[in-house]
Image (cartoon, rainbow, N blue to C red):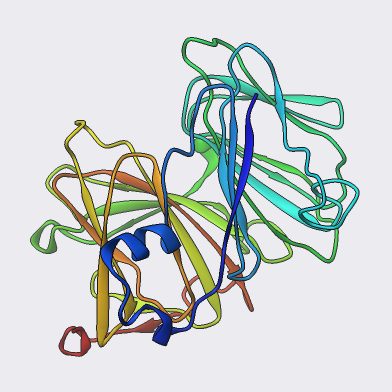
Length: 281
């Protein structure tokens, strides 16, 4: 088993004005999250979110840190959200084993010492997308089956953004310290997400782009200040960090899905500052 945790530093809008494409990719894009048998995490200084992939095969995997966080165990001062985008697996929280089929989620509260991930079939491993944020209080653990996710249809075919938002970790149905997490699926014939764009200065966000129908599918992810946008070309199962001052929207060569996760000052999903199209440059 290989364990890696890359550090991603925070940036001001001025920092990226003259970044090359490669510098943008290095600072904001994360690829190869799901390597069989490995744990690949990124620790971003944007609200100190940790996110990444845990892909167990023949042996279970557990996130065990060294001195990275200055604590005795991973969730001593953190909460954790998980969504499985692979085959069937299990998550065992301090000895309590729970089944996790494709698209099932789980919220794990602060204080648990052992969170162990396993796959039912090593040839079709579970792929646990994990997102952790700082916590100040322990809230109850909660299994979040895909069938129970809050479903919100949005968009229309005329604007090529017809999609369904599935809210897993959401303040309207459960308590967390700050973490929010969900899964958005675009309908066939739609390729835009979140356009017109917006920012939410009170929260940062990560996107994990998934379920590309063909190997040559690409999503062009737009970020940056509204009047100074930049873009990244995203491949399947790659993620991007969006600082709170940045827009975040994308368009694909076909339909796709993505997992979003947010943390920051509040948990008000609709607290956003919309950007008029004539302000985008």
